[in-house]
Image (cartoon, rainbow, N blue to C red; front, side, top):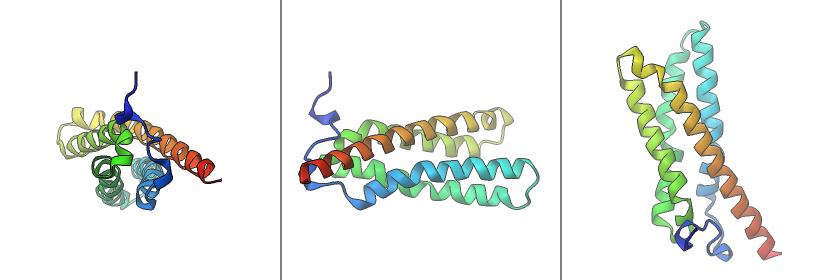
Length: 138
């Protein structure tokens, strides 16, 4: 059973903020870039760990936009669960990367895959909202 608080299609007439939809589109692409830079670094590409770390720090921007938007904008509250999960997984990802033990780093790619999955679900929900919004305007 879903209530009005979990409805991503609330208040379609008011649209979806560009910064929110852009963040939803950017997040999975950025995470895929993280996987790519980690792969390049593992196979000897010099300087890519620094790029990987920099991109990882920059991921905070779309994550904060999505989570903040779901909290602050009433019509986006339906995205709260997935945006909150993405934020939680991002924080866990940072904690795993900061850990010195190889055991904690072993979970870093697994958590990255979970974060990618959450970002793709968010993207699908955002795109569905945008498509429905276009239908109501037509």
